[in-house]
Length: 229
Image (cartoon, rainbow, N blue to C red; front, top):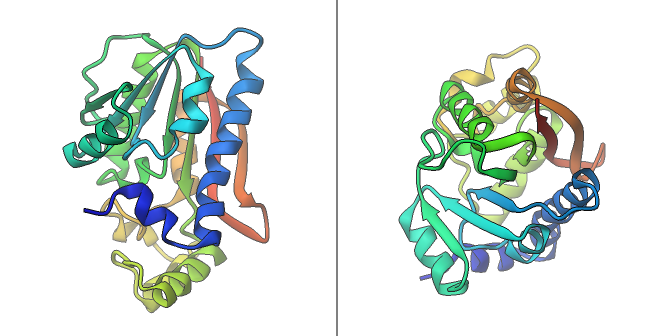
């Protein structure tokens, strides 16, 4: 069976560069915002088979990875037998309050079924973070002109479009005039990155936002760096 990392690495240099740009930027932000002391505990939500582990593991003394799907956790254990991984629903994390200094998540929260469910995930992340803890995530930019770029890239490479045909992609491009959230079923279609950012701001102090990998020219994902109040 092909693992998550193998699927990413087989996508070509552009896909690999785009993917790892998020991990690098997140690691830099965590080091900069954490101060001189290394964080004690880091929680990564949506770790898949541990593709981001080389960037995230050095950031904290302890790390726990979480997956929604047990098959991803099995891939994780096979690739990283000495690292901790848990299969759990981010809407109801089986973890104690104020247990982690940092929580990360990469292209996972947009897959949660609805905006209300994502708000519940944010509430759980807030709960398990220590006061002043960092929340660093990246989510895809699926509205504006990146929506058209991504649609044509998926068609040309044979990737799954997950509910986006050309008329829907056009509506995502014109998201200021169209209700794209009606397509929101926990996938690329209907995900409104700026509404998600508003939901983060409602619970955290947002310290930084940055389009990844290249603002303006290639803004495929939004990196959000926030702190628990």
